[in-house]
Image 1 (cartoon, rainbow, N blue to C red):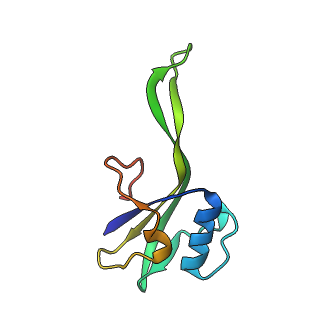
Image 2 (tube, rainbow, N blue to C red):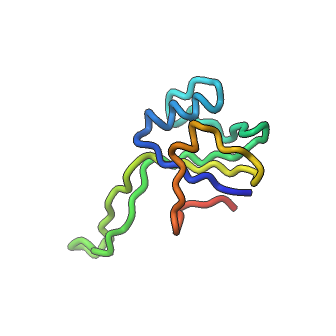
Length: 103
């Protein structure tokens, strides 16, 4: 199995891509299906949305200061032999240390 790490420019672009891949309207985050078919195979979906990363600094109360990570994020877990849909290939990223993984 492999994970497709997807970073869309924004939520609207993500919803449009999921609509294209599923063949159904995906109008809100709640409409993103828990599974999608990729190359004829059922795959798990983790619609993450916005991410933040700690800056390494803390505020006056000692809480970590975070900053947003660019884009709107989702992960799709696919069999190794699955061909990445065009709507996902354009936004696939390869993080060195992913924030969320399957399994």
